[in-house]
Length: 516
Image 1: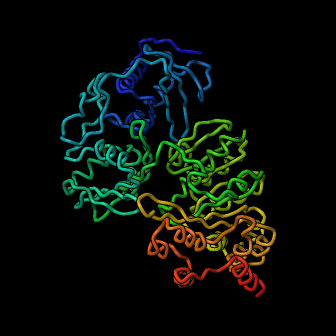
Image 2: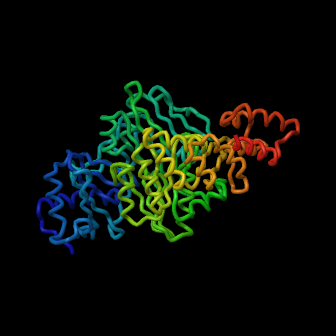
């Protein structure tokens, strides 16, 4: 069903907004109570320079464009610019009207919006005011650092993170090292301007209320960035992590082969752990893409924010973002069980409720991916159990012993000659290891890993030693990531003298530990 243009004030208002969207190459418009109209441009949501809409206005605009008797969750609005797909959502009690531009819409103007902070004038090409001054995009903030140039330099230079802090020049992280850039020292106006150029209005409100916010946005067609904005010493600071558009394969990353076997089992919990910046998201994205390419599954990802975009291949992929599509990880997990999933990815097991929901989902016939900020498989299992109250831990040990498939713990190191590589610890949960978890003997897991080399298991320190022995990474970098510094240092010292621990000796030592 469609609705014709009847000349009403509300329809005319929607037409104006759509014209602004089209003229600037936008793909989506969102109208919600308490916020200015938002346009999706270049993958990011941009607020219009307009007063916030009331709930009554949003409802009136929705009534004007939704055909009588049509499904409010999916309808078509026939504007003067073309057919527009629409959805009416209820987000935590707030009505949100979404209109999406189809491919048939006219091409955008030659000078679309630019994220430029070079002066306080509108970005090159003029302010977005084609539909009237009341619908203009905000003018660029005052500053001398251009956000586009900063992002382009990061993409071209292989930068993993951009650090923006008042009182310092922009700092790039390259191959794990921090490199201050030869630009001006940023003022408070500079950092505030850079923040406003890329931060959606809802996130700016969250920043003001809670002192921080996280979101993702696309920089043209070159890369995506995961952004963390926060306050420090009363000033704005940001860290932007670059997420390459091209997904790497598990083989290209060096992910152990056994991981592909684990994630294709019919059910269970698979965890990727490590400190911040260790490449957990990249590993998970590679494994999800492996499943997407080779298996006809329904994959649901829940992320905060969405990092890697997955296009459905052999599998069907749906990606939900916390704060935009669903209020929390735990809520997303509960709802996911009603959405016929085969694989569920949880961006972060950050609280007790989410951990509990993930274990339950893994028990009920789904493969669940998750991440934790822990180092080592043994510590990961203990961390999950310790997250629960004492009176629940025995039950959780029993559940976890049957639900968990395996744990991959990783560390990222700079390579000799440039670039970075990952060291991996791999735990494959066998019936024997399941018994260790159930019987509260997790302190023996490391020894079990040493005896399980034939199953693809290995300790992080063993992989770090391998990388050093193959002359891929420097000794000092290996020792910085070691779990047992004294033992790894001894092995390296012995190796320099031609003395190596053979597999039989290692296995015998581990077996003695297990017998204790």
